[in-house]
Length: 129
Image 1 (spheres, rainbow, N blue to C red):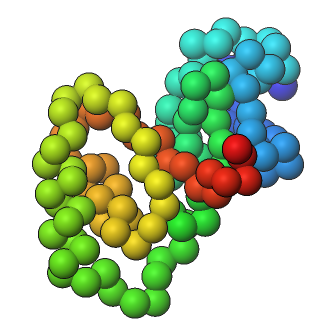
Image 2: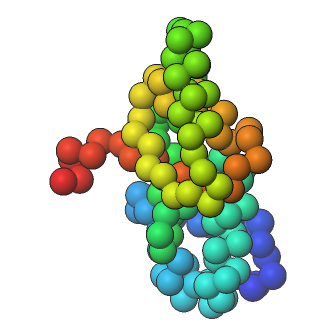
Image 3: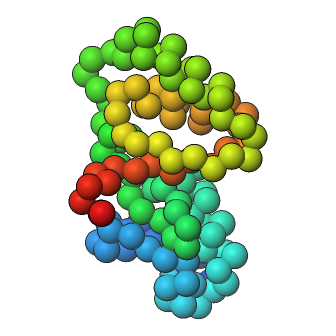
């Protein structure tokens, strides 16, 4: 694959992610014979398009909670809690968000705001412990 074939490289990254469950910047840079900076740009672009979540050193698939729309609307109380939570996030903060119906609108709120906070989603924490 040509180093300059960005769409094909990004498609292959998504295929590897689906197959392996996670990908690392280092392994991808070696596989594609390109720089880690290029791979980080690819992962950033794929994350911006809602196709994966970046994590330290690589990327993981989106949690199912972020991909599936709930059949029930989120209550106005949960939306208010979410807005209040997002308002407390400082610029350039790094936060970890667990999955749930209250944090779903918070994620949407923080993504739509001009915040520079870095968010990581945690799902099934007990299985990883």
